[in-house]
Amino acid sequence: MGTYHAKSQHVIADEDALRALFPPVHTLAKLKCLDHLDRHARDFIARAPFLCVGTQGADGTADVSPRGDPAGFVAVLDDHTLAIPDRPGNNRLDTLSNIIANPNVGVLFMIPGFDDTLRVNGQASLVTDPDLLACMAMHDRAPRLAIVLRVQEVFLHCAKAFRRSRLWDPATLQDRAEMPSLMQIIHDQIGSAPDPDVDTRKMDQDLEKAYKDSMY
Image 1: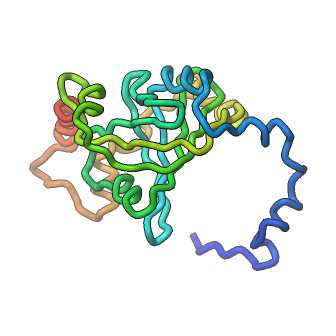
Image 2 (image 1 turned 135 degrees about the vertical axis):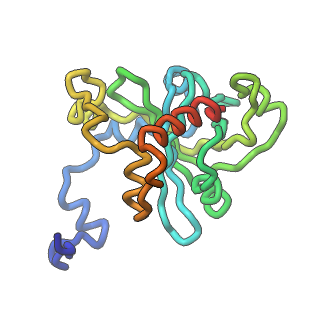
Image 3 (image 1 turned 90 degrees about the vertical axis):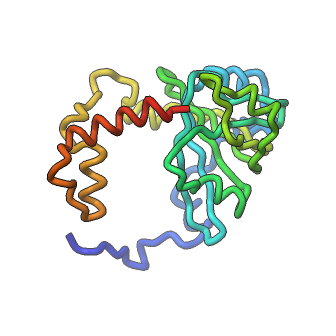
């Protein structure tokens, strides 16, 4: 497959050219953006077991990272402040390092079965307040830190993307076995063949055990 390069005449390079492609923004789309967490946003967050947080590094490199826990795992501290516990991961610390370099973040909350989503934008900091972390403990294990987000924008996003994707439709579920396992894919990507003495199934089993042992 060759490298794709768009011709310059087909590249949108300024906002005026971008806006010319689309109808004017609907008045409701402008007015729905709040600067605080109202009761509907609080209710949505309380139901959400999953979110994605978008960050950007000092060099402008973007990243999106998933976060998940039982519904209500994100703490609403006041009308302008959220706290997201940081659970054990792979220790790359991409999101956390980016927040130190650039505190501007965007968060997308999702609820299984809901086709609309909640978007929250603001400025984040990394907090190790013991009292806050104790309130976010799971299985008697408090997180090492929390991402505390000072809210600047809050709005509900319409259902079109989820309707198009049919994400929650059981009829669209795919069989994970149709692709190689995560461990096999990683070995393929880094060009490292698994040890012939180590069965691929054993690696997958070890990964599942690690999930159970290090979830919190």
